Image (cartoon, rainbow over all chains, first blue to last red; front, side):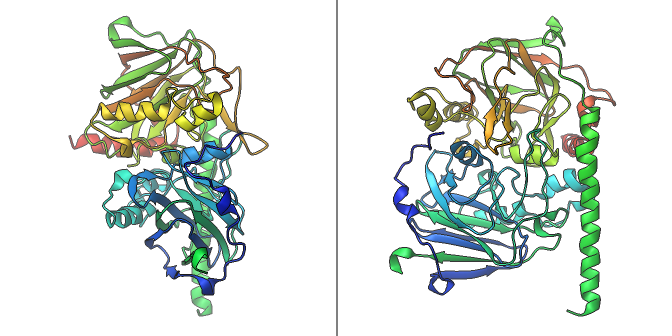
Amino acid sequence: MQPTPLSQPVSAFFAAPAALDPKDAIYDFIIPANRPWSGVVEKGQVLRIVDLEGCQAVDTLFYNAHDHGERYSAQDTILAQGAPYVSTGTRLISNDGNVLGVVVADSCGRHDTSAGACSCEANTVRFGQQTRFMHACRENFVIEVSKHGMTKRDIVPNINFFMNVPIEPSGKLAIVDGVSSPGDHVDVLAAMDLLCVISNCPQINNPCNGFDPSPVRVLIFDPSSA
Amino acid sequence: MSLNVLQEKAALIAQRRQRYEELKAAGQSAAPKTLPPPTKRDGAPIEPGSIRQRIAVPGGWYWAEKIARGEALRVLNVSGTPGVSLFFWNAADPSERYNSADTIKVQWTAELRKGRVLFSDMGRVLMSIVEDSCGAHDAIVGGSTPASNLRKHGDATLRSTRENMILAASKFGLGPRDVAPVLTLFAPVIHDETERMSFREGVIQPGDFVDLRAEIDLLVAVSNCPHPLAPDVEFRPGEIELIVHRAPEPGTDDLCRTATAEAARGFENTDRYLSAR
């Protein structure tokens, strides 16, 4: 399959940073278990997410930092690469067909972008009405995007870094045990200025967080200033 | 941490895991047994008196109208065109809309067919698949875009689902921000053994149809553009017919309301929402 035409060439970026040393990061933050985070990653910078303890889903959305109407599209991303899992080389495509960023490193190997984020409401359907008052990713997302002038309608199906959701040829799918080990990381090179919004997933009713949510670390590198 | 605390934590994790494994086993094994085979292509006739609207949508075009609770939308693929995309919003509060991820995650499958339901982002059932002659639909890859038309046909200006959805949303006073991943009917897309998304040829035939029953009042957008993975060399989208009709009143044993524990809980949420009106 031919790649999606790009708004700007991305090949130049692929030469990017082979080995990034955490001490060179221009930003370094630990997102506590269950909590949201957002930040701007400028074009050419690299966002690294580290699964500190392993098996921790990191629900992530990207928006064009200058036009939040342009945002991550799971379907366009899957269509562009013809395959459903996110890993090294995956170009993250927007709803306008532009490349938001490229996964340039991935020590884990497989990330989901079909199963979306948990919500209080979906939890009642999946796990029973007794889960209605348990914290969920979309609660994190609503609070975090509200800081940027957005609402629930701006929350779309996201990437679940470090979450493992095999899709069988029959269509059967389920969240199964994660494949990430403590310290695994994924690097996303920004192809435009990005607003990145994260929910460090609080779900305890399925294996996406090993039934025990844990902290993750986000770093931003600026190769041009290194 | 002390040994006691560690042991308690391990016990809690084990307890949570056991409950999940039980739900997964029930969700993945029970449901397919209870779902019926596809509707025959000449089956499920519609009582002429129950039809409110019947319209032919030319290839490449879209349709955007309100459908009331209790009505069904029959999407009749008269031409065998490879893909018809849908998106829909709660008419009373369009911030609630079809959610592709929840629909497949909650039901433990991306195989949407007769007996399955379509969820909103609010844990409620918006539509039920009450009749379906093919059971070959795609909730994962979605619809065509200017980029996919450029790639397939060398022309980004051809009509696409992405632009149709923006147009359809505008007719309800909504914008591009209100359009999220779509459902594409008549698109037999599977995640194949080579880990690629592939379109199975020869599955969709002229006369295939789907009946979608609205469970609350909905704003519905239909885009009649081929699926981006469909192997059509030329851009030749065929005509479809849309028939809005009064669906038979669901009984207590209604298939879609009872087929799975997840659907039953989704309808609990929908019914509670409706009871407040």
